[in-house]
Length: 626
Image 1 (cartoon, rainbow, N blue to C red):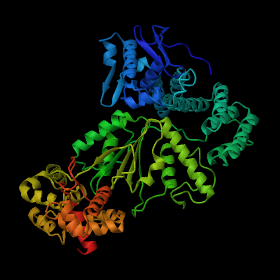
Image 2 (cartoon, rainbow, N blue to C red):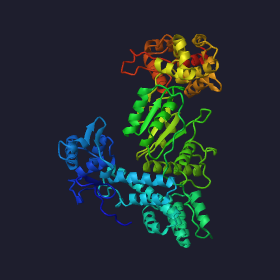
Image 3 (cartoon, rainbow, N blue to C red):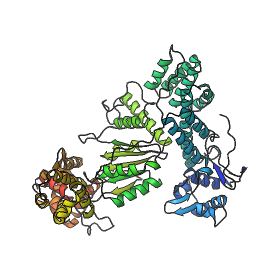
Image 4 (cartoon, rainbow, N blue to C red):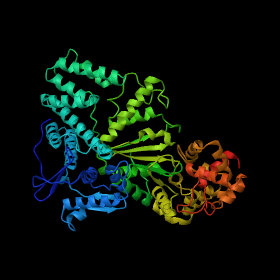
């Protein structure tokens, strides 16, 4: 690959480069960056531009094994040097590197950092390709690649933290090179990509998309024998290193080249760059949750946390909140937002192979890795652990492809209705800038580190607003007292309020007060909360099935105590006929499962007032016969 000309920022501005050795230039002149530890701090901050970098991350980058007692003070010195580099002390530089609760944040513009410029050009190139402007796409992608001077941060890769960031940057560069090469082939200019593809395949021999593009460029250049030899070498390498065959897409490309001419065709593997995709439509009646929504947008938008768990009982509105947030975060995740349900329609957990296959189809991450005969579609029967040896290998290949895709992209993945920690552990990104938003009924306490948001019952005002959207504000104002009784009888559960609104919207003749009386009757309330094929009892029953047998019995005993507005630990121990320690364990097990709520602030176990959501308590009475 030819070395590009030196690019500089506007006069008077420092221009940083990470796509090669770490450098800083001012008006075309390279600046000294100080000792190695100082360069490591600067490289780590520049690798996460405009994003808070925790002090712990900086410490690990500089002293991975045994940081000195003065590590924090030394970091302050190195950060001060970065401020000086960016501008005179007390002026621009001090404003550009700031310290907050999330760590140090370096503010930098696109024209001052090659990786930001690279990302902007790559996005513009992909957008042009999406519009059908292949010539424009090739030009923009080539301009992005001209910023790539070699392995990113190649002078600092002995630091594990910097090496991880460098690997992510290199993966992005490779993806853009593949985009550019495929575009040139489509334009009928395959020869311009041949040599560069050969060099990259030698450095990344198992990267199938690179090899497919190389095959196509050779074939379209009239070098058919060489193209077929590339496939044969790859087949032998896969068998030797992984015990696998090339993917069906790669094999199909090979077969299409046998005995054929040089007619233009697109490379068989799909583009790995996923265009921004809107998530499934949000609930039209989404209402309330302003605090939780704001927290979700702040946490995911600033990139401080890569995994967020939104928990709450069945019908609490977890999915609606997650989809609303995904919709509002479109500009922060340029490589797309996708949603996958982790349960089947009957409430049972899907196996990992099914989920990985769906993620692969949605994001273009699996097609390059699946081998013939594997069980990668939801219709195939694959055990949660991968089944037989061949299925295990196929699942492992899908998992590797998914991790590789996440390492190269900035996307938001919504894993909806997760039953337990084991269902998602292999799906979470180990590196890169993808974020995962998980919704679950339980707390998923075994997942760490994650940011947790628990959804409480809707406040009265929020519940009334939701009800009013469905039955009309005029009807709500006609009898506000009865409307308040309805939402409180629903326990502030969004699904129950929504079903009440849908039912009342059809039963226009039914006075709100009469419907409130029906819901106040604990023996009939769940029978009233049905609208067409939407049943609150059915949703609660699904959550009930998640509980262990012992937890169901405990919940049945505690539900009676909760009718008076809550219960204490002493009353729980009395109702369960057990000692204090056993009662604590029983109650906390239900808190973990999302079946019992506890105070948001810190309070001793004995002083806390615990609650069972009203409708869940009614269902527990039905099932346990209490």
